[in-house]
Image (cartoon, rainbow, N blue to C red; front, side, top):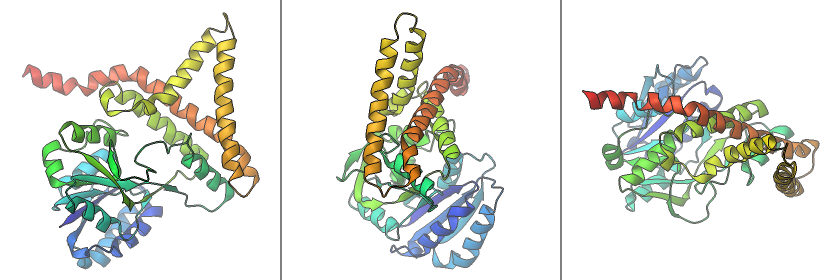
Length: 341
């Protein structure tokens, strides 16, 4: 079975070498692997590393293709890669990730068992070794971080709504089409919703595992959470069905606080009660996480980091809800024009 591995990258020079090394060491026959690399017009050495990988390793694989994506976004890059792939299966690999040497083989085994879409565990890892980076990682992996999704830590193989770094049989792509190029951060949510809507199932298998690097600084983490929340807010206007209630929790919480703040002229009690319960949950979970670690002073920042990312995500979602009305008009504009032709 020929597998096309698609990697779209923008300024990922610090991570690509590790992925490329893992690809050359895959336990799945390399001659049955096509590597399709998409450069999103990077300004660092990403393209150079891609060229070097092709020149040095193309003979090992079925083939190595390098494509430039002037539109730069991940969804357009994935579509460009899929459209130029020859494989029977398409495997999406995040440039900001790490894959074990049995990654492709594990996916293929599941597909050969009869599944059409599959994926597996996605724990996060941190690149730096300093204490603060490790503390950021603790927050990311916590229950109030980003690890509540059912496709990230489950210990049971089962059907799920979404997977990270999925493998898609060509039958699925031929039926469902490609990623929605109007959605920049929620393309996976919408695509997997469309897959399920078309009668396919998404299989989560515990034999499959890959890792994603967290953002290396608090500033970048907050920016990421804000952008994620913003696109959740926008997407809720055009595809509410492809999102779960968990996506909206931070936005609903921050909105509730804002409403209660406006009602403080009537009573402070609701605001104080809700925010106090929230702080008890945050500090309680933080104490639990700290108790599991070898102590260092940066661990004391855990509750404040949690609060920062919750509010960043929540404020981003609210902004998306507000700007989503205009986004919805533009999103469906071409559809309306086609109807009038």
